[in-house]
Amino acid sequence: MSILGEKGAFVIFFNRRGQDDKPEVVMIDTEVYACRNCNGWMRKEFASADLKCPLCGNETAMEMRELPQIE
Image (cartoon, rainbow, N blue to C red; front, side, top):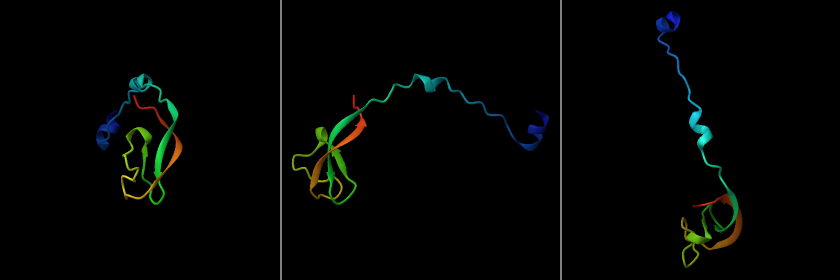
């Protein structure tokens, strides 16, 4: 340890205990409205009434994507 102290280095310990407690992410097929012109999209549950892109305002088309389940 005296060599590390002389060089100004220090020892770092990592705790992995909390990583095992994370809940499993459930992926489901979800209907989304995707923009035809840009990368914008929105889930069907959160789509606006006029089905316009939230980013550029152009038309969107319905498609299926595998997304994490929202609780």
